[in-house]
Image (tube, rainbow, N blue to C red):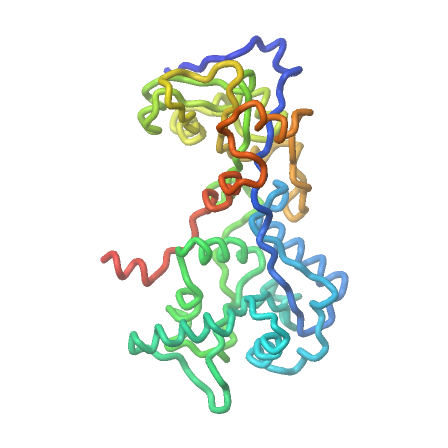
Length: 349
């Protein structure tokens, strides 16, 4: 039987809960361009789908897509994606970008266009593997791009950034042999995930780092839990603190599910948390909480749940990272699992 310890009488919890959401370094901003007119309906549909896939309803997505006054380019109409890439390079915009075209409204899909440098490196890599892509006369290089369902884009982007997959895994595997940059890639890449339902997306939505103080946590030394975490004391939010912050408490779960929700409290001293401690926890969102808007709606960053600012809280604990310090940037620790890289899989065999 799992034994939990409440650290403060329930009657006083409601006055003391001040869970703080740890700020990250800000989202990756991805530029959007379009070969067609960006109508209000098209723009709204794009943002809705993108917000669903990036779990923007929880207020702190890893990436956001920027549609601004530079996005709609009449000079991009009726020219190739390669020509668009080269025109942007000439304007000193050399980053990857999202491209909306005349099929996006119906297909709910976009193109993810690589940089010129990455395209050339990917081509050289495949040539060295004796698997060159298709080339066309008059084209300076092979442009690598992937046609992706908008709702899947954040999932794919996270996987690429984490090194779990590459763009040639996406488009040069079973879809086309060898890779042809003019291939329409129909239907668009679609992993079939329903990002609006917690049953389908529970393993894809990344958790969030928060800080909590002594009255906001429960802890246990039960071996049934601690043996999975390699620590003597495991800590989680109280049900009351979790409810107020829109997160999950392990006390609301049972069995193996509870084990997955706990996060160890690492302390040099072999003791449980005590008054004055600031505890960092990685906690999953409660999809059923009224705190969060429906999928497809971007919520503002939740910020402090109570009146205690992060600056005030970090001032109480000298070892806790200060706002803006590299330790505070938790994004690199919050990667959700993505599609396996075929090249990695081959190397491991």
